[in-house]
Length: 51
Image (cartoon, rainbow, N blue to C red; front, side, top):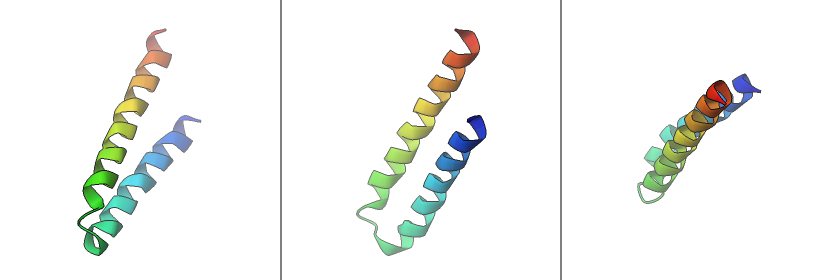
């Protein structure tokens, strides 16, 4: 479960890197989506640890 979530966020970042050369308009949207996904993942992991 943990590993699967980390794999998904890694794929998200690699997708952002790939699309950067293709479209500069959509890459900030993808970047912030990945950023919020990573922050959400961090919150979920710390909540599971402390509660």
